[in-house]
Length: 344
Image (tube, rainbow, N blue to C red):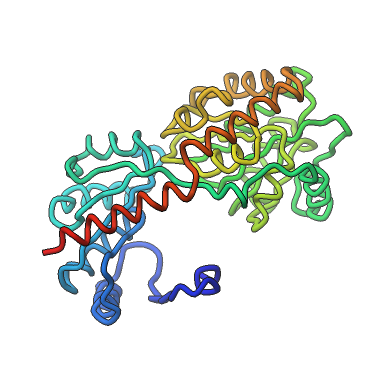
């Protein structure tokens, strides 16, 4: 909200609590829509799609665009309220939205399968600012300094001069499967691979007893730095040797594109559109498979610095060709113009 406000975009705070929307919240949002009279209403993710869609229909005939950021609806990995909301949205998809934007092809296919209106589904990938995310030769030095300043948030890591740094930027959530990465780290230690791990994201700090317990059980306390939420992710990313994503579910994970734009090769699980994003510039492994994850990381470690640099340069070029922010913005602009032209 603060960044949008600083850029001159009006931000309205509705004062709603998380969870099931209260009827009063829908009414307040309806009143706001009538007041500001937008040309298009775009909502992001299931709860906002449901809440915003209902409020928009109550307020009038402003065209609505839903946006879906999810591609894993396995009951083991989702809250019941999330699954329920997705099913309700599927039922309403023929009545409320004019278009439904998915961030990945995997997401489009999954939501078509559960009943979303296939005629309205389309894919627009995420875009990346290549000026904000770019290689920086000073990145590693800056990361070393950040790690030193954040030692109290670490489990107890120690890095040597030749230690490779592997990073994962993800909130602590079942979908991200941090345990998979921790178990892979344990295997890498057994194999004698000299590497440390820096983790960033909400809930990823030493106060997280579950995560700290996994790290302790794997015997890798001296290999992890837990930095919690950060607002300097581009700086940290440029200092990595390898970026990792151990998820069981993703749509279109920004962290992969951001790392690739920084010329950092990636190892990711084969969920969502990860394989399509990374292509042949990194390694893709099955989810929930620490052996495969560790093996792919070891492969990138053993190819040496020049091999990783070649992958990194190819990765940035792939982002430039497929996901450059300006081209994605143009696709959204075209969508908005199309939807406004369809207004009743």
